[in-house]
Amino acid sequence: MRSTRAVVSLARARGAFQSLPVVDGAGLFSPDPAVRRRASQTLGDATRQAGFFYLVGHGVPPALGERMVRQAAAFFALPLEQKLALHIGRSANHRGYVPPGEEAFYGGGRDRKEAFDLALDLPPDDPAVVAGTPMLGPNVWPDLPGFKADVQSYYDAVFALGRRLLRGFALALDLPEESFDAFVTKPPSQLRLVHYPFDPADADGAGIAAHTDYECFTILLPTAPGLEVMNGAGSWVDAPPLDGAFVVNVGDLMEIWTNGTFVATSHRVRAVREERFSFPLFFCCDYHTEVAPLPLFVSPDRPPLHAPVRAGEHLYAQTIQSFEYLRTRLAAGEIALPSGARPLSSLGQAARHRETAP
Image 1 (cartoon, rainbow, N blue to C red):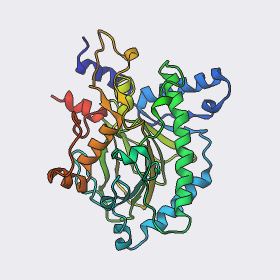
Image 2 (cartoon, one colour; image 1 turned 180 degrees about the horizontal axis):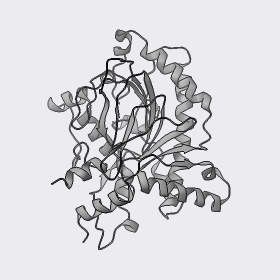
Image 3 (cartoon, rainbow, N blue to C red; image 1 turned 90 degrees about the horizontal axis):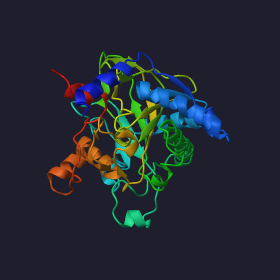
């Protein structure tokens, strides 16, 4: 049986990158299966190397991102009382405004970001919503001209890209292309509009503390530098925006599915000395999907590294532990953590380095 320390050593040896690789995703859209397979091999190589990469050739019109910046700037410029009227704690399904300090990751203090969270917009009479499934339901929308239309158009386009990437990841793992399709019918895939205010006096402030993402993978559009990624050696690597590119990274669920073949790479946002917007779409699978190491990635010398989780329960548990309003409800007994909930930051590069620290 291979030890955890040996697995970590292997990950470090193959992941001591100093910059993010660039992947051209155009081939993933080809009608030719051979072209899609070749493109997926490039995708897989970058993911194994870094767990993070720039994606070009993605087909999402630049105008959609430009509208997102305008709408985010308009929303976050509103008076605080108007934003707080849409506070995420007023929502039954975790949608709305996130003020500075509301969210705190493992080991992190009060951060300087504010955000607006939304997800798949389901009506109140949807069966999954009626059943009380956490994280599912209708969005809340500010009363701003064009906000809902522009943000929804961006969500739809990037979510469609996520479906294409999911098939690319399947091919990269030598699985049938459609292997994961059945798990993405009504997922709690969240889109965040994140704002890091301009602060010329901020010498080394944390925009977001180190963490992994809880879902399958994330498709991010940032407007300014600040993102840092942990490599396999435990060093932080700068990941500035690349013109015309998304930043894509693997999340917890893909690490569990692949038994650590793909690693949920830890990342953070630091040194925010200029106004910065970022728009991550966290691509998830359906709430009740059981995610466990796939047989292809398990052997006598590589036993399962992680216990199975339900996708939505993992997302919900991590969210409860990182949002102040939910921690308050948890302490009051109004909500409960799902059975077997993992603690924050228990996957990814940072967790592996903590496990093997002398």
